[in-house]
Image (cartoon, rainbow, N blue to C red; front, side):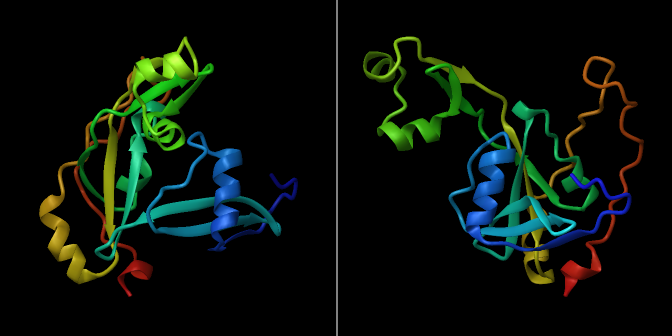
Length: 186
């Protein structure tokens, strides 16, 4: 990060390669979504420091997930008025050669994620991990799609912080929702 007392932050479109570099080096998942993506790069005082990557829905909306396995609940999506549409199925991972990897990544690499096959041919200590589901959020990009998908919307999940999960107080009461930002309405 910048040592400048007032760093200049710039967010702009970035290439697939730039986003891939950021994800592979600085994000816990180490992989980009397979679907079409909207990619924004982040620069601080002219130095590339990261990327914001959203999967692009086929119907003029952005799709993003909050990964409970990483302690993410989607508060930034909620604060930005994304629509919460539910949870994915439980995420399965496999510990292979001492590294926890998503089951789909294993399947892509070896053509299978069968634990017995992996133990026999790759790592005799391979184990299956049943993780938590992810919260799924949608951001409509125009009024027409917003109207069409609003019926999918559910109440935001109640994930108030407790003394067991955080040293900060729980969420503030209230159920208000803000309007989409002006920049996204045009």
